[in-house]
Image (tube, rainbow over all chains, first blue to last red; front, side, top):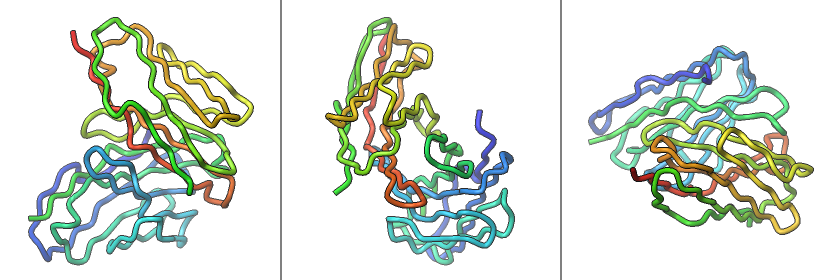
Length: 114
Length: 114
């Protein structure tokens, strides 16, 4: 079992609300990622981080923002949620030296914006 | 364009039977290929990872093969169980960046009936 945790697992919020999805890992991994996945579709990278104070946008444009103040913590924030943000958000981490190493995923956060 | 295509899109088999899932990719330069199992509403869990020099790897009843020349991989499941019902995702990593960018297939949805 991977030691990477996401909260909340399920959330329904109203349009315009601010929401932060939490992600924590206890494996000491430097690299962390946020993916977005719609039902039946592939995962899309929206943010990644190589380490503390390092954040980059991924392949899929997202209105969300992230921060990496501590190695173990990589929260994702939506300042003003919209129905188009309804999706599953998966947090992941991997040790330094990605090649040949496994990426560990959290259980996911299902966000519904009404 | 780097892509990962999986087939079939969905598959139903009877408990105890074997099945084979396919993954074709165009990702270049190739680094490694992973198979993940994703239960409904959960995060993906790694089954196998193979680098260029490996052409087969097993994990219990799961056996993955890789043909780097034809850019094809397969995941063979032996003596299927009800708990094998899940989406199986093929993920290919390239060498083209320090991130080791990941390309995800859409998955094969496997249903095992009693």
